[in-house]
Length: 249
Image (tube, rainbow, N blue to C red):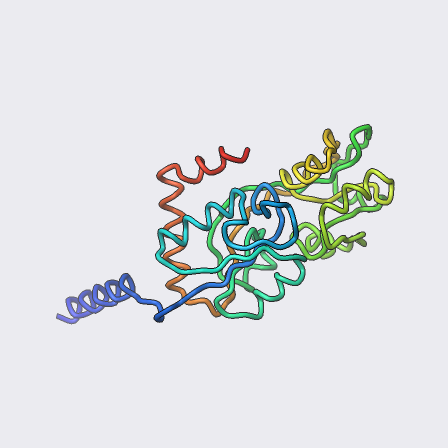
């Protein structure tokens, strides 16, 4: 008898969870940055909103919220360091494309992965330099993007970096000899360089594989995470993710 009561209680609880409702007029505030080809302003400026934000992950996120039946606003702003801190502090705010790391895991609630990336050290196209370990990179001046996952990782390992507030600035620094290596994300770094007419940068080393997520403030209801993750899983199964990627790559 007791066993039947426990089973019935669990079924009722599961049903209630499946039907969980969000507060009336619930809305998430989403922030992103210029991080092509994953998220970027249509006019390549440092501010854009709603349909003026495009890219692989921007399109994925739009479809996620549509399928999950959750309202949102979307703004692209600058710099990453500022919007990262805003989402840490504001309940029901989210940020993409955020690289998942063990250090960041307890800071947010996560939906993803949206896409796969790699971390690389880039040099000018005529460079013959090749490295087999990060320790070897300590002998060089390394530029990076302030407070993104790559710079956080390197700084946590004791690197002294020449950080920029815009990752695009590192292209110019590299070509002018102000830095020896550019620590960035592939395919983002080469894509940014190509936008500035620079191609063929040398990959000196690939030192990590990463995954990009939608990071939500810890105060976001679990129901939001459940719906969004379910929608993402559905999109992966029905081929929607692959179709979006083909539009940009």
